[in-house]
Length: 153
Image (cartoon, rainbow, N blue to C red; front, side, top):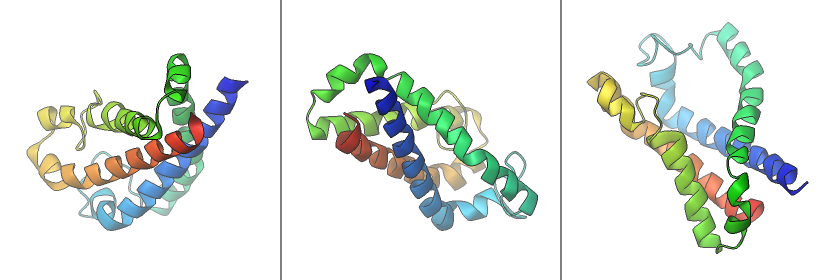
C-alpha cells in the first residue's frame, strides 16, 4: 500500500510541477519557438496554435503525464526507505537533481535542452533554445524536489 500511495503522490506532484513550469515558461520563452509560422521547432513539433492540434494535445496531456509520473515513481521503489531517512535539504537536492539530470539535461535523446542535443543538433537549435529550455527544466526540477521533500518521503 505504501508504494501505491507514493506513486499516487508522485504522479500528482509531477503533473502539478509539469503544468506550472510549462505554463509559466511557455508564455515567457517557448511560444515563439513552439508554434506559429516562424517557430524554431515548426518542422518537427506539432503547431500549438492549430486548433486541431490544441485539442489533440489537450486530450493526451494528462494521460501521458500520469504514465510518466508512474514510471518515474516505480524506479524509486528500491530506495524509498533510504530516502525517507534523509534530511529535507538532501531529499530536495536528490529529487530535484535527479529530475534535472536524468529526465532532462543528460537524457540520451538529442534535443535543444540536452547534452546529446549539443552534440547532434544543428547549432541554431542550441543557440536559440538551449538556455530558454533550461529555465523550464530547472523550474520543474525545483518544484519536484520541493514536492518530494515535503510530501513524498
